[in-house]
Image (cartoon, rainbow, N blue to C red; front, top):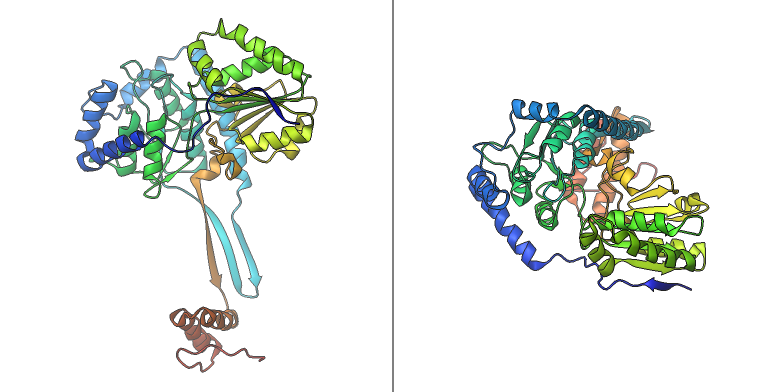
Length: 438
């Protein structure tokens, strides 16, 4: 039987606030119509940063890199190496294909990098430099020709550590721009910023809504919502580690759901007590407490099967599994953004350094998509060719008859003309090709 030890006060909504949508539409229109002038006005208004050009110079970028301490540079290099290595391993699995399906008929596909990509790196509340690795670096591994990136100023100045990470990841152009104006500038283009074909990267509700509204004109990585975490645990671990992992993600924002599924009532109650203890000493407790009180949830199950069913129902962005047999959940869970298997790993490892991408589906989108990965920056495009007259006439006969079944005479004539020329058959205009062996 499934029951709750803690129920959330509020439920996540999957609808965007209409006031946010209206505000974002207005801001997008200003940039679409006003170009660089509008971008500058909005940057002054929202970020307090006034520049002639928001593209950073080589000297500014170099200063950001050189401003890193030796340890900071080592840590950034280490993190980017892990992410690059895994992205490259993923890229290596994506093989081009060519096959002869019938004598003289060649079909294939190629994995083609998206040419122009824009990557947004959030940094208003926290300088989330890890997002530079996850977007810019992954796009570069995919082979994207031009990768540009925007990040807002941090405390009124260029976010130097973000810029260093963007540059080390291989960005071709770096802009000190945040919010909707950054998304609009990359999506629509301005007098000085060429538009991109795809946008990637997380952001606040306004950034997410801007990406949603631009989808179709350009591609995007994911429809993003607040950070989510799910801890699946049994009595092989204790309440302190469960509480730590729940609050570690709840600090993202006041609307970040942190959910626990367990088959141990003792562990559930211990986790509740440990959460209260940790909230008394956590520097980000103001945010984490509100998130936990409003959206925190502990679900108690009797069986592993119930735990899997509840995990799939929640379909969380991050799923931390700390049980006696974590691989059981690897085998049986189907709806998750990323799995973190065993107590030795955790979501923060994935967020910052271990190598998997941290841009993941939220708001139950894990039911139908995975997260950002190197494949998102590639288009798998098919091609076909026919090498012999006999093959063209053979396929043409089938195509002609199938087109007539649908009433498409013009389509049928595309087939018929080839049957006439390459099959040496006299087919009346607008007629279906008779089967040779009919």
